[in-house]
Length: 465
Image (cartoon, rainbow, N blue to C red; front, top):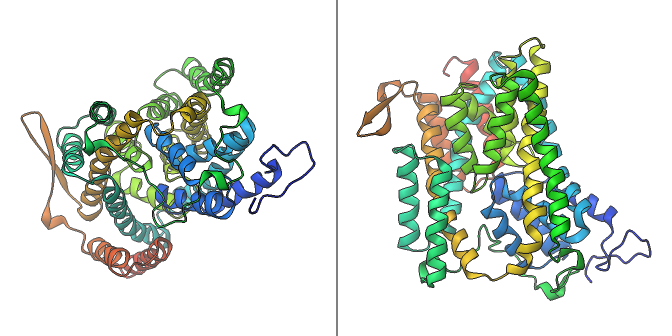
C-alpha cells in the first residue's frame, strides 16, 4: 500500500500504520493547520487521504459529515475521529490533543503580549491592521460555505431566515440550528430533492481516493464496531474529566466567581454551538461581549486575528476570551496567573467534550454511511450556518468600521444602526484593500494578514488610526 510501512512490532495494527508514524503525521497536520476550518480540513485531506492514503474519500467525507453535525470545532473532531479509526482510543486522544496544542501555546503567549504591551503604539497598530484582514477572512468564509451549501432556493431561504432570526430577532443560535436540522431531517425522509446530496466542506478539487485503495480499506475495523459497554465506559470518563472540575469550581468559589462563570459558560457553549468555528464565534461574541462584558467587540476581533495567524482550530480564540475575563477580575490572584489559569480552563472545557462526542457516537455513525436522513439534516444545518456566519461578518464590520453603533428597537426586534459620521476611514480603507487582495487578486490568507498588520502599524505610528 502506498506510503504505509510494514513492521513486525506489536505497535503495528493490521493496516500497517504504526502508532509512532501516526504521531509524527498528526504533529505535522497540527503545525500546518492555518486558515480556519476549511483550510485545516483541506490540509488533513491532502496529507491523510491523498498523500498517505490511510483512508479514502468516502470514509473521510462520512466522518466529516458527522463532525459537521456536532457542536464544537469540526476540524479537531475530524482529527479525533480519524485517529480513533486508525489506532482506537489512544489514536483519537493523540490526534485531537496534538491538533490543539500548538494553537493553545501560541494564543497563550500572544495573550500575555496583548495585556502587557497592547497599549504600546506598535502592538496596537498591528492588531488594528489585523481586524481589517479578519473581516475579509470571515467574508471569504461566507462565500466558501455558501457556494457549497446554497445549491437551490430552499437552501438560500434557510440561510436568509437564519440571518434575520439571529441578526434582527436575537433568536438563540441553538434554536436556529435545531429548527434547520428538523426541517432537513423531514425533507430527507420525504425524499425532497432540495435536501439531498449534502457533503459538508467536501474536498473539491482534490484527488478522489477510493476506500479500497487505502490502508484501512472498505471494511470497518474490528474496534469500530459499536460496543455499548465501551461507549458507556469512555463516555463516563470524559464526562468526569469535563464536568467535575467545573462543579468543583462552583462549589469552592461560588457561581458568581469569574472562574465558575467561565467553566459554566464555555461548557454550555460546547453543547449548543453547532455549525463549526465561525458559528460558535457568533454565539460567543454575542454572550461574552454583550452579556458578560468580558471584552469589547474590537478585542474580540483582535482575538480572532490571533487565531487566524496561529496553527490549530480557529475556536482557540475562546482561550483569549477566557484569559481576558479572568485577567480583569483576578480576585486574590495576580492578573497574569488568573488569566493563564482561565486560558487552561477555557481550553479544557471546550475540547474535552469534543472527545466525548466522537468516542460516544463514532462507532454507531460508521454504520450509517450513505444514510439519506443524516445527509439531509447536515445539508439544512450547513445552509442555516451560512446565515449565522454572515451575521458574524456584519456584526464585526459594524463594530470595527464605526465608532458609534446604536440599537433600533421595535416590535420585539433589534436592529444595530451605525452612525455614518463615525466611520473609521483608516479601518475602512484597510478592509477594502484586504477584500480586493483576497477576492480579486487571490492573495493567500497569511500574506494578507501580515500586510494589513504592517499597514495598521504604519497608520498608528503616523497618527491616522
